[in-house]
Picture 1 (tube, rainbow, N blue to C red):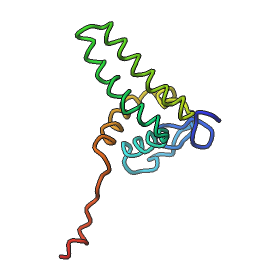
Picture 2: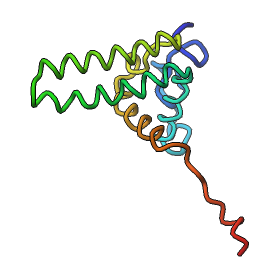
Picture 3: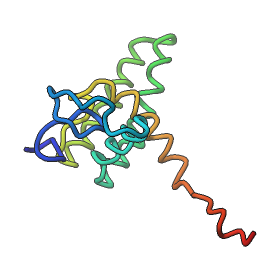
Picture 4: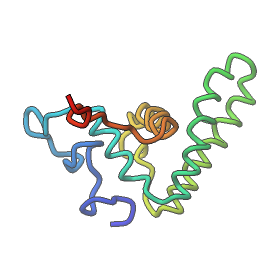
Length: 130
């Protein structure tokens, strides 16, 4: 089904469980934030969608405190940011995850910061020749 990249049906973010079904107690275990970020990453594979999210996410986030300055400008900037994000999903061919799970709006800035930081390097103590 268009809009649902895994198995043709919407899932609970990061858990692969179809919406409307309960997960088994304890879920898959592990780190839920990591699972959420991996799920978010999986729905943003197209390079144009990633580029548009790199622009749109900070615009949406910056628009929030601008409400204190001028709510009309803040609203216009906020809507423009979301339009950029939705355009990315149109190009990718899937629905925004926030339409299925509004909590994703909290994962998106973390995904953006992680991408901004670049690839993570893992140190391997066995290579130090101790």
